[in-house]
Amino acid sequence: MALTPPTRSTVPTPPVLTVGFDLDMTLIDSRPGIRACYRALTERTGTYVDADLAVSRLGPPLEEELRHWFPAREVPAVADLYRSMYPGIAVAASPAMPGAREAIEAVRAAGGRAIVVTAKYEANAELHIAHLGLEPDAVIGDLWAERKAEALREHGATVYVGDHTGDIRGARAAGALSVTVPTGPCDADELRAAGADVVLGGLAEFPGWLSAHLSAGTAEKAQAPGSPEAPAAARA
Image (cartoon, rainbow, N blue to C red):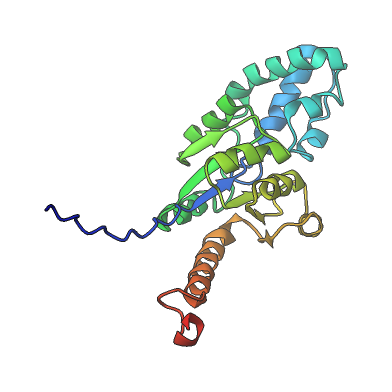
């Protein structure tokens, strides 16, 4: 009579940490490049665009800004023109934000994945990433506010880092922790009022925050009833 081999008890593999990052004014300072691109657009179309005003409210999709300056029927064609001009004008002019590389490296050092989820046209977002050598695990473009949750959920992101109230809305729609930096158009008070879970002074603070966040999570799990590390009274 054949004996049934004993079955092994399996321990579920913990989910891989995935952190999402916004691009414009979170990982990169795109104001110089976008300002130059809007000025070039004014020259090409003959329609004035106040470039300084436009870069003071970065975050929403390009078409939303163009509607301030062009008739609605012209916006799709002007958006295509802007995007075609963008690589040669804006990419090299846009530096990384202080702490951008270190933030991505901190996620990797913790054994996690870093993804970029942005409203920017995806092909141009990828050009910025390649130019600056930031090397996230994935770049997903053309998503704004609540629609960012589509990519965050697909990749299992539990943290989303951004600079705009729209980024907070995207994080909340995905059930992710909203971590923000006041380096874009929204100041710290506005971010808090919009419901950000965390407001950092800048991206350079992110590695320290992530380390503390992960340590707190580990300690919380260790104290949970039923955990091997929990006190005996909690397991009883």
